Image 1 (cartoon, rainbow, N blue to C red):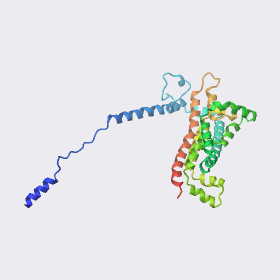
Image 2 (spheres, rainbow, N blue to C red):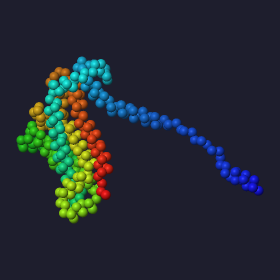
Image 3 (tube, rainbow, N blue to C red):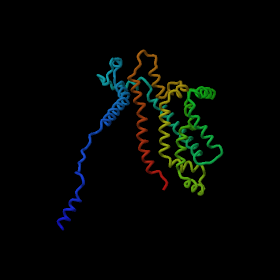
Image 4 (cartoon, rainbow, N blue to C red):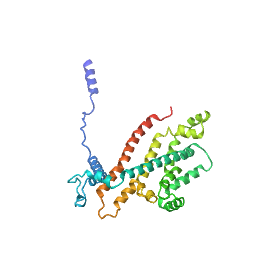
Length: 299
């Protein structure tokens, strides 16, 4: 009997069908197609940057060669020094940094103040005002360009930085919307406790809302800096003196000069120099994003 039971158990323990070992499947063909598309799109996106660097290192004679060469025969590093000798690039840099920093300060402070009011307080007609504010984002700049020009001309602000900097202290609709969405996520209990301790409304905005809004403020600052740094139309209308040109106006003056041969290699040199601040600020702000998300929170 024992032998029969053992045989029965051994039979029952066997699987009803033979085990099959799954062989590793080969990567589907669609994955290779997707990888090929990613490579092609990456090359298309990187091609302008490669052309920018290549043109900046070419000589004047090689600029007109056809077909154009990606790698120049002779790398002319002196184009960088020639650009500084022929054009006041440092002055353009100084003016661009001044305008960009003042615009960032004005836009972030004024927009955060307005956004805090829309996010934290209840009032009749608040939603209607917020809707009107968002509707202003759909107005194209050419529609308000002429009225602004007439206004600033009558104020005597032509050929100065005032028409570019002063409007930023009245807020930006997009930045107000961005910060308002972030302020609504802050807990009401925190502001109620501060109000019970005698904290004023201005102090709540300055000492509580702003320190807790690091990622949103950093994002708003980057957007404002890039918009102002790359702005040409809003600056070329009001700045006439060469000592007040920004980098955007300076590069335009180089490309549309009266010379028969446009120095595209020097224009590309200035273009590379204009990209450096944006890359540095983005790298610094990316670290600030991570640090703000980790450190800013309500326990």
